[in-house]
Image: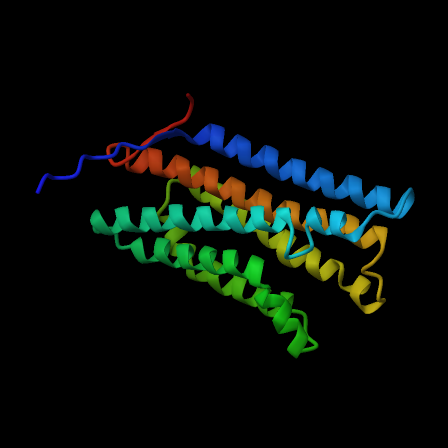
Length: 226
């Protein structure tokens, strides 16, 4: 039986990151424009608003965010595989990150954290913050093993993501308690939260591509420009 041919995959990582960033900003702007129009000028059909509402599960922004998290998980699994082949003792950390991002991708669509809110009066952001702190402490040694620029960008992206997912979530709790979710104020906070989450992930993904190109240049063909 003939041996299958080797497939060489080459693509521009810079172009991909720029495309993701432009898509992110575009979706946030569409949400903001529709929200301002609805609350200040003319009542828009719910189906139109839902389609581009960053706070709804069945929407284009949520699909984009979930896909972004899944793509990041795939890249992390790839790094974990390459690290294991090189007998890197930190390979399990990459695998752990991949599993975490895969879970967050599923959560973005399935809404596991919203389910937690329905069974307890405590906001999911409180245990979420605890988990983030525990993971951060557990990964300190891993971060110290990375090149300094990569480690700094990892921490920056993590801070942006957690600041949006948990910080803004806690800051907007009063809207929930005051039954003011259907207001202009709240619906202008949601793109801040989701924008920080997606922006943090895009920065993290860009850092992962840079790490791959510097650590495994012979394994992959990832071009910065094309």
